[in-house]
Amino acid sequence: MEELKNLITEREGQIREIEKEIEEYQRQIDQKIGEASTLKNEIKRLETVVKKLNADIRLTQRKLNSSELAIEKLGIEIGEKTSDIAGRKKELAAILREFSEAESDSLAETLLKHKKLSDFFTSLQYLENLEAAIGSDLEALKILKLELEERQAEEKTAKERLENLATELEDRRAIQTNTQQSKNQLLAATKNKEVEYQKLLREREKKRAEITEEIRKTEDELRLLVDPSSLPLPRPGILAWPVQIPKITQGFGKTTFSESAAGDVYGKNGHNGIDLKAAIGTPILAAEEGKIKGTGNSDTVCPGGSYGKWIVIEHPNKLATLYAHLSLIRTSAGQEVTRGEIIGYSGDTGYTTGPHLHFTVYDARTVEVKASRVCGFLPYGGYIDPMIYL
Image (cartoon, rainbow, N blue to C red; front, side):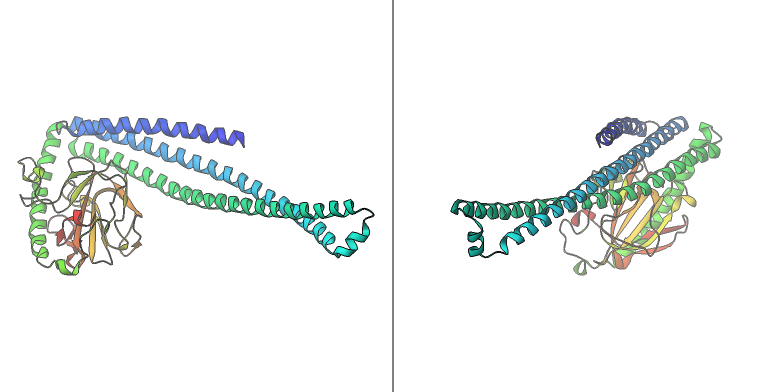
């Protein structure tokens, strides 16, 4: 057991070291986001992202190993508790038999068995001691059973965590592979030449402007169909935050970025959701239970032009939510999800100025998933301010 505890402590130390390594990679990635849009800088950023994702994989593997050790330790403790309970039961059974035999004689019979009155009272004291021992053993047995139940509950939680980590490990490997492929595709598309990269950026910007205008026109019409009176009354908690540690990097509607010359990505019409800080590979959580209305990847038709990988969930409360710029989708159309369930991982697919989650809230009755004129299948809807429900 001591060796097992030492191994767990060692794994925890390794986890902390890898977490520090990931923090440093993330700092480098954030720094590169603010640098000029050159092919050289973009390749360096992608290389750092791949290194960070490899560290994510190692971290998840260490957590998985640590969880396996924790389950092994709990298994030993459960075995010890079970053995202790069996021993206590055996002791209790022996005391009960002894007490039963002593109690079978009447008071008069017990008195006549003893030559001296003092022996009789000694006998009574013995009975009292047996009764106290029974009470003590019963109490000890109750405590052992409670401890056993606690360990069993811990083991169940640990096994669920192990299953989740195993799934997460496969997901992170897929994200790393996708990112490496993105780097290779960029090099192939630009022939590793800066002039070709700048040409690619201009083409994407033109496509992005067309898509933005199309979405704006469609959603302006759909917003007329929003019926606020039939939606949930605004209050915090109607929807859960889609990331564990929410930090808004761009708000809803008219924002400094949306109205700036550099940020004219919404046709001066404001932002149809909020952006949340989320490094590539951050788990994205369903804001409420519901059914997946659709998923897609606009990058397959117009790379860097729109939402990238996206998910739309329709909720029973007549709201719908959009999650965009993902690196990996873990759901499919028609699937039922629960509040807080991992549905994908954040990324920087589609049109982004850096990794983040774009989160939009719609009136579910206005949502349409249909073919765009220029960018494959996209979600549209009558959007409302997410902050009134978060």
